[in-house]
Length: 408
Image (cartoon, rainbow, N blue to C red; front, side):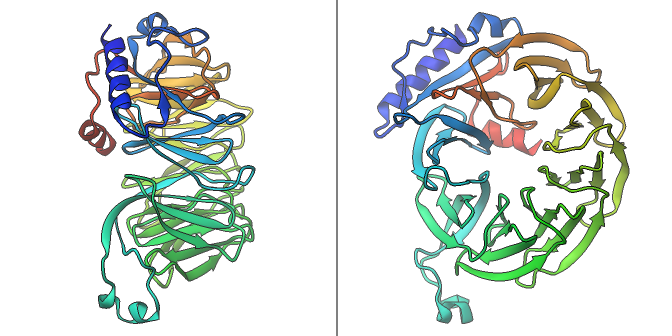
């Protein structure tokens, strides 16, 4: 009952907002062709909110991302729909590329200072002349040929920077620079305020893994098998690189605890993000690592093709357990890992022991957020129904609570 009350409150909130992009006309108890609330209750879960996104004829939800306070739906028409992840209230939508064009995953940066006008030569030579700069929390998203820098509050485009090369990776932003990889193995940095390129560096082969910015550094994995750490400043100095024995094609993870890098040489590497030294011996798998690594508070999760799913102790690199049917983590909550398996079942697994406590089919849902940080499961149908699922005992989800959970 508490879950249905939350769904009803979210619907009322949405109705009061003008320009809301979602449709809440379906009754809250209408779960035809979807996992019923009673089924979720068996795993101590409940629907926290439900939202029906307004899609155009022939349009469908293609991808789902949760970043900080936002939940993003990217549609088959390359429309990015931003939603309040805590309340399930649509906030804005914007077409980020023409239909059929490649669009890479979005990224966030906070406290980015930008003026309405792009700096000219005078401002570049004398930055103190820049007038009217404001601080924005931004979302950046790039296609093959340009990047859009948008205000997360309303989707307003603050910068559109056109590339003179073909991008081949999702880019990232450190608050001052936007960095992205190209098809020829080069990676590039652009100043956001001036919207100009600043430096370019090369790797030995094509880039496909998304780039990551952390702590004033840019991290790049190449199909030449090397992992690079570069300063994001104006010189783009190479700080260190480490060589693996296979292409790096999957998304890696970099945070204060290290850089965790899957390679197609069947090994998962963990490096100190500052020095580049190995934190522990590489974890040897029995298949190539072509899927993103997922790093939780205590455990690193990795699926190896033609092999199994690994749960690895973050501190030691020791394999805790394996699970052949599992594919990715949807959430980690109260000591349990919520895994999606190859048949789209939700597995509730003890994080330390690897014991399956519950299995239930995620009927109707075909788009999921992969996450080890969000204390919720986000799922969607291609037809536009988006839901947030939480523990029945979790209480109300607020932006402040989400921020606290992200810091854990």
